[in-house]
Image (cartoon, rainbow, N blue to C red):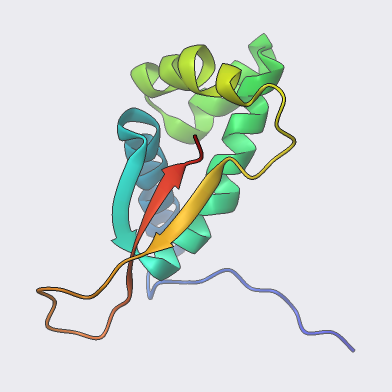
Length: 118
């Protein structure tokens, strides 16, 4: 019997987890590269990939879905106008997680960048 897959909880209630992913996704769309922990970057990847797939469709319904997930007009505009056209021929894998070295941290967290593939 297979094991159930469970998303990372980050020791937060579900509404705070949703807000965390939303703000990370918004920052990634606006800045195109975000530095965060490795676990958060890995959890953000499917969230942002789904948004890029919505943006590739470029319909009113997909724009509304993206607006509901990001809750930021500037981020939705950039996602649909400049990010999605780059990946029109690509079937997935729009982001990559690049592991960083630990510098200046006092705990054992693993740091990473998450960025759009060029």
